[in-house]
Length: 426
Image (cartoon, rainbow, N blue to C red):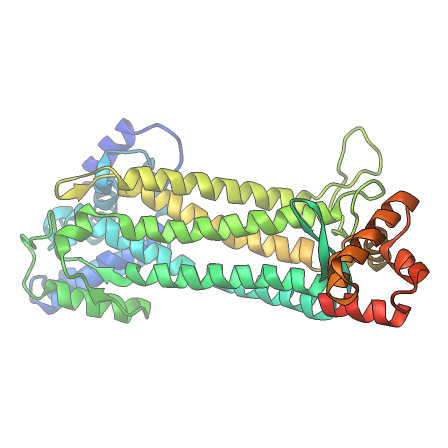
């Protein structure tokens, strides 16, 4: 334990939240160190015996065997020097080498931590995209299965015009698809690396070929295609690639809040609300009201979305704090970004498996609301004229009857003609 003086001081100084780095970040940071060892060894800057021992130690670090030694608080001295040195000292102690001279060779916290953050997000991305795609698919199944069910369409939370249940759910599917595409687009900038720029992007103390070999080795280790940043100093002081990715997560969270809001309203009841759908019951809804069932899963996912929106604001504010050649707030950016990605992944999975699966469509109630609504009137105007339609609506309101009943009573359309118009309107 000879090489851990920096880590000891950091642990003593930063006892703030008890929140430590996500495991995926530790894996990403170790991956950067492994690529650096391979790079420096191939450049002849590390002798083979040291490189072999360091590689073995680094792989153990990546595998999580020493996570109990990587416990520095996320609220720490800026830029993530404590994280970088914690990793350097763990690997150095295992390999019996120097943490700065050997493990940190050709590196600075200022290029290592943003690079590791990029890797960590990219490592987390496939899970989120997979959960999104599966949720889109499930919404698409519901849409296709119920495309012929006509219901009341609503605007301003008021009856508007008829729409099919399938159209509503297909709109939810399309919204998530657009969010997925936006996330994929924003993730592309995370493949741009300035590793080798060291402290301020000038490449001080790094071999001239270090950067190009790091891109090659990182690509080989991760299977991700990386490309070189055009301006290394810009990457060190500009955290906007993280903010832009977070904005895509914010967009997804906002879409989910809209979709979940609709599901809760359609589920409202069971007797005194819309009750067009019934969400699966997952647990009792009250400690005092027997038999009450709440939309527990949608509520939990709403909390996820609100947390993501808060994380996004934190990231935005942190990205505003770049001064000259460095933004020192990468640790808090990293933590919030990875938390958002993680909880959105598990939130989508939970929503799909415990709310969308086995969702019950209450066709009888949907028909009842449609028949009692005046939303069909707008669709009639092109066929019987605005004035006559308005007169039918007035009579329906006065008599407490449906639009269909008044149309058939007035004999302006047959039942078959009326039903055909309503079906076409959606």
